[in-house]
Length: 74
Image (tube, rainbow, N blue to C red):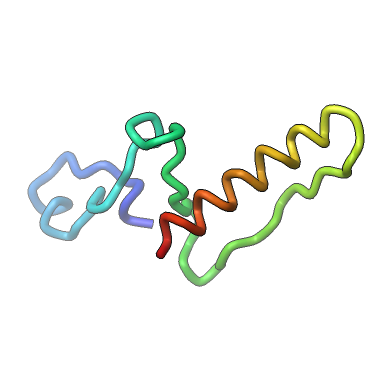
C-alpha cells in the first residue's frame, strides 16, 4: 500500500505515497493497527497459537492487538 512507502520525490508526494502512515512507536501502546498487505487481500490470520505454554501468552497479545485495531478502525 502507498501509505507504507516513503516519498522522496515531489511526484511521489503528489501521488500520496506515505500519506496516512502512522509510526507504531508514536502510537499509544506502540501499535498503529495499520495493514501492510494489499487492500484486495483483506485481513487474514497467519498464526493461531494454541492455548498451552508460552503460546497462551502470545494468544493474549494477539487478542489485545485485535481489540486495539478494532477500536482504532471505528
